[in-house]
Length: 125
Image 1 (cartoon, rainbow, N blue to C red):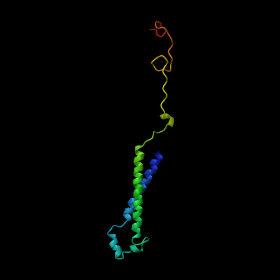
Image 2: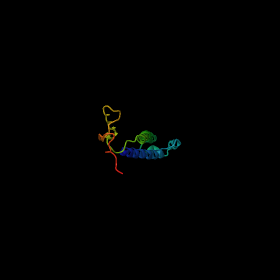
Image 3: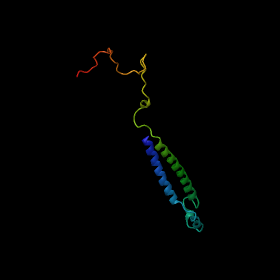
């Protein structure tokens, strides 16, 4: 999952830098008045209004990518999978059945049968 976070973060930062560059390249609304008096923008690669349409559309596409990567980063930040381990680590251990005739669950080590008055379980002093 770490690789996805890195990939989405790189795309997010690259998109942000692209939006900044495209916004700085675009002309303001007042620049159209200068083009009407022959400021030379009509001889550009896209024509007088072609560059505005191309830059506006590219900025809109990058804005959509930016919002999608923002949502992706938010999702990746909130959904943290368990690091390491296997699928079987999530399965609980089976409970041991109770000994028939008693209310106590079974233990791993069986107790030795000793009479109640015996001193076999006592430690000498």
